[in-house]
Image (cartoon, rainbow, N blue to C red; front, side):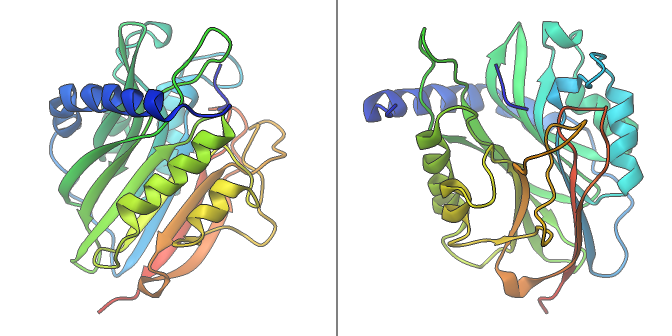
Length: 286
């Protein structure tokens, strides 16, 4: 969803520290949400991945309906799901712990990575998985602090390391870039590269709402180190009812660790203001 210039480096650093404090304070929430890991694991070395901005549970019909979102997710039978715009205890969405509820309804484990306090609760990104979880880390991303003239939001990424179908570690990252400051999106892409693209020791899948089209500077920045799991026509993902722009993505690296078998935008027009993006991989490493 698109939420309702130049960046000041000093302000950006202060905001980064504030965002980090939020992440540190809520770390126990992140690692404890969702209970035990799901028991069912994928067969063979195939991996099904979904990316979904859920618009804090609100569909295009105006209804807050987490079970409807869970049905959309479950129908794809994913092994890993990157979620954006998750409410936990937020007033607008009825104080529901959306991360935990989606885990319960899909039978998957969840880890929540808050990026800000909002209406008495928390808001941020999450990962659902049916793979054993080995590690969780929250990373704040650079952003321009909101002013009276410009509304912006803290940004971050949650990285969950799991045991992949080939029994080796796999890192899965869910993120959401700034909606209205182009310089922020480019800085966030650069930070994602710094955090996760320094070496090929752990194959990594990055999924999220980048808030930018395929030929944009932030996507091109990511493509210096990642491969885009996108179809030839770059099928649009927003708005959900009649999509005309692609801003949701699944990237992976190194390319040699994966074979992309299938990728598509799921034709779901109501459950969120974004359509979910799906990719299926074969793990290739030995």
